[in-house]
Image (tube, rainbow, N blue to C red; front, side):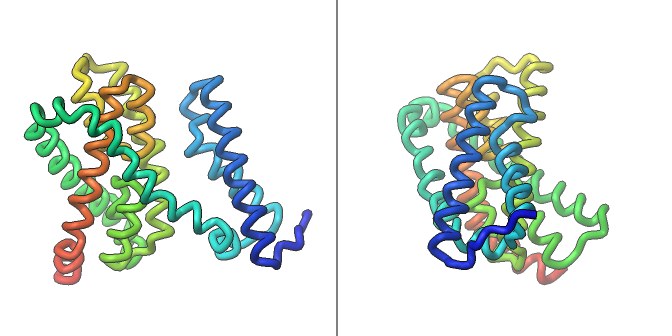
Length: 237
């Protein structure tokens, strides 16, 4: 197989950053032209990146060393959802109690089901703890994972898988069930599929996207604040 001389840190960072961005742009354009669930950028781009890394014999350590700056942009990207949230502040003021109830129910359900799944599959230790925060957006999930003793990088993989599957299932549920409220549609996708769900909600409508973004951020903040208590409880189990 082809092996590139990427030992130099600067060259490696430039190469893999360019490849990562280019593959995502290509995947996004494919999805815009053919909006099928299997062409979602969050599904296509990682698979293409893995194939490229294997072909070039590049380890994860070498890859992340050159593209860590992209990961650091997840925080500002999450904060950027504040713009549409501000535009929908009147709706939020009217329905805050419904949003709060959905956020709490979704957070508790996601953690319980993640723990039950890990128990059923016989997972334990850091793997189980890495799976626990899978239903949050990546910046929040990695922070929670680190706090409770998981592996943040592994948690990011679980988050992406949950987001892609959640967006797919959410789209199917919205098509099969008579859900007409923009609030309900946005909350469903924001809680169940975080970033991927919010992107899908924006495809449906601006109001749905704003609600999804709000719920996604609130769920992340709630779980980050809850993480110390969660970590303490897990140590007692």
